[in-house]
Image (cartoon, rainbow, N blue to C red):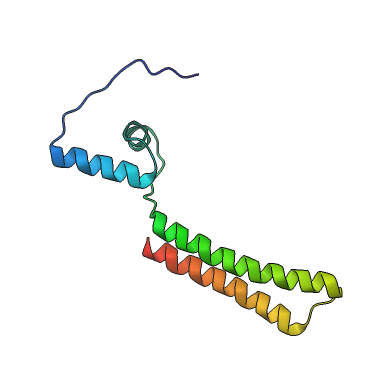
Length: 106
């Protein structure tokens, strides 16, 4: 296990510290992990809007439930109607639309 023994310090204004704390929290990282990620890697740190992710998750659950109902019918009947196939295609189009819309708003 990696043991971090060296402590690097810096001075911040109250506003700088609050901004750092807020941004780290929005990324889902601790302040220390956020600083390490920003300073020591080439990776971009992405701020996660948990409300947006939650709404995407809820919409996908609804669509998944509908697709599951269609799959259940198809398995029971051993066939699936053209109308049901169109509905599945519409659900996947809706998934793409929601994803694209939410990603643009982030």
